[in-house]
Length: 147
Image (cartoon, rainbow, N blue to C red; front, side, top):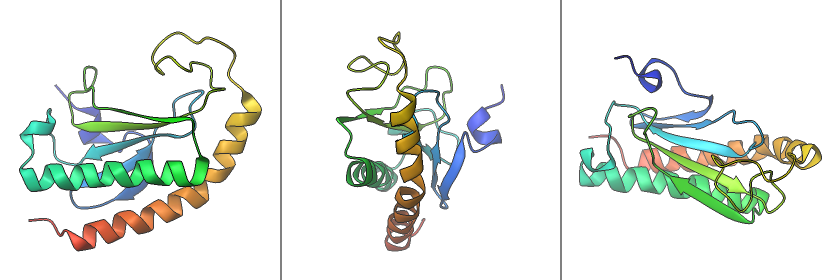
């Protein structure tokens, strides 16, 4: 069985390090939907060594902090499901009380039409967010070199 996250980035590549990468998923209605993807193929978080688990969660935290700082969302959703793609990846999703699914999960049925103007405003802010995030992730990688 081929793994799509081994074969390709899985979205718009924001940053790639030796151990993991951060991508912006292209999920309709959710412009600030990111994934932290472990580069090596592992299915479960517990497959990682302790040091790698800490490093991975520090990267997830940096993505969450960047979303909060640059977008001021109502809530951040974190998930590591892997039911469809059993390759370790964390979903980090900025949620807004006006989004089409709020307060339900992004995978639930929409409760209202998607607010196009709000999505456009969020998209316009992502380049600055991503440059700042790249800097933070690069600092993390240099502080914790791969084994």
